[in-house]
Image (cartoon, rainbow, N blue to C red; front, side, top):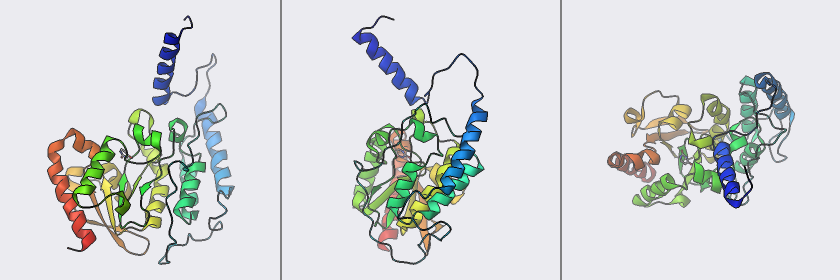
Length: 299
Ligand code: URA
């Protein structure tokens, strides 16, 4: 192909498509057994993660993360600009095969995070989830960490990946309008996702990716310690409550989520992305949001 600005643009567009779809390396002439290589790497990495003390501010290894009942120091949300960036693929970082050792290391690291800042830094340094290789940014949280209301979605999309903040695209704008309808805004809510990196092409996170990320969102909920927890869509509710029902059956039904020192009132509602496709269902979401408001105000 001859070099010209038009060709350059086409090549760039093609590369962007590949990168978005998760293709991040070229094929060589000789076959490579990536499974053997990545398993070995995953084991070494999990060992390294277990040995590493990634945060000086974290509790010492083996100690219980401080939470039970103790007052939580005010923790300001780091701004998106200051948020650590996800690392881009490079030749020295082969994909990790999710296995029990990686999941165990995620659990261990999350448990040691004593504050939300620790947890964010810990995720930014975590190499156990392959989604980080294709994501542009870590999407940790938005809103107010002191809020009584917490929302948990499934995984970031394209806009969230670009900005490093959850629910900022079209579904996020709908979420803002729904909050506004009950007299609230993001200063009265804390928003996060089960998976903090965008899956390539917005595909559904695999069960392994979800399992690897789960200890971090569990710890995030523990550290925020909200009074009311809202799952946006069935995926986050299924992951965090272990319920098997579909969203139609589950939505609007209050459940008890085991918090660090109390039972948290938890409910699932339709994901705003679903509401954008099925606007008639907004009637039911409206009921859910009124019920959320009533829980918060005790009415
Ligand atoms: N959908 C989600 O589940 N999370 C986001 O942050 C954006 C869209």
